[in-house]
Image 1 (tube, helix red, strand yellow):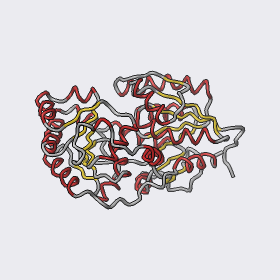
Image 2: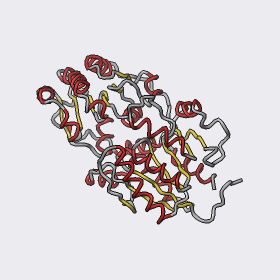
Image 3: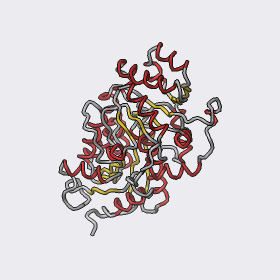
Image 4: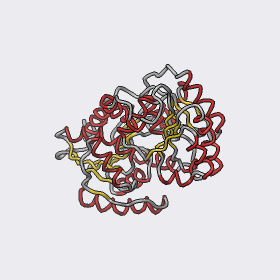
Length: 378
């Protein structure tokens, strides 16, 4: 028996703002549009303000043009979150949605959850229950607060459900109301997208034409503020990368902000070695690089998972990971800012790639489970 009366189609605001959210939203957006039960309103906060890159992601992933682009752009955490809230509140007043869908742990996620909860709109949180327990990360604050406000908590794994249980969320039977949230292991929605894109991308990326085809390469990404804004950490990490690049090519799609933080002597050292600098890649580009890489070095949570899906060892220059179950398999190793350890672990993965990749995040059909769960709430 439904606890909330359904009067017509369910109007859903599907809120995105950062590139990883475009990827997650693409699977759910397709499912919403294929169903006669839902009316999807796509809203882009503009938190990632590279218009060209946003457009590329939307086109590649088959996401329709957002009905609203709030064009918020970059700012301090408080100013950005407040600006998104102010603009989003006007969208809610116009559209009068039944449900807000948010993803992950960005300022857009938290801003949306705060607006929806104050206006009495129920929230579905995709990628709920993740915990790094590092409260110096803004993402940790965002994800915890969003979980506390959500009616549907769509968890990617058993571990994420266990994290919520420790906090008293999900101990009662699912009731589809703010006081009794629905906690469900749907599997990881990024697996839905990665499986589909992986089938489309097989050829070695053209950007690698200058690299020897008979030698495995490392794919490197760095973007976390605690790595890029702390020069001693950044120097140590990239010194380890330079040591690795003495013997193995390193492919480094680098954001201009990260590039501007790299000390000039380290930049020169990387350029002298086999380090190939690239502009930020589209999702298709990232998948192509992943499929052909020998090892992945990243502080990105999303890329850790995608590397796992394509059965690659991962070196994580962080002290902790929100994807604890991947680390537990041994296919990902935390090295923090220890450049020497990073170099050693990467070399070991290149010489002896991990072989055990148990199914942790479902079967690639998480979007359908999410839609069914929302429908049961009306």
